[in-house]
Image 1 (cartoon, rainbow, N blue to C red):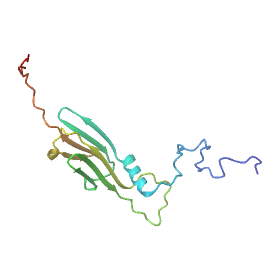
Image 2 (cartoon, one colour):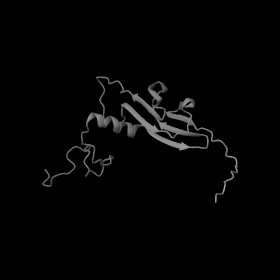
Image 3 (cartoon, helix red, strand yellow):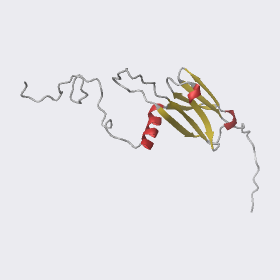
Length: 157
């Protein structure tokens, strides 16, 4: 029997922040309980990472959605100015005889919205999905090439 109390406990699998053998990084928010309305929004932020780049011809959005099928994802234009990417990742079936040691993959609904600039063609938006990456292309309106125009100004006086 040890006279010194153990910070590691008797179980070597403990997730103590003092355990030098733990592979987990300490998360100060891990034990906090969030309201269900907030957790859905947090899920959207963490599970649907989106890059947005602007080229000369279009705005291009790329969303990482690993393991999802195109049937599980929706791309919509709201109010003629907002691009909405949403979907739902379903929970894996649990078998009664299975023992789960760790569950880190998230499930549930996600939604991301982006306010689009005025110089886009809303009626020509295209989306494709390949290898878990959703690509949404929003073409830009071609700006009329400005001709050098000369306008005479009358001088008064």
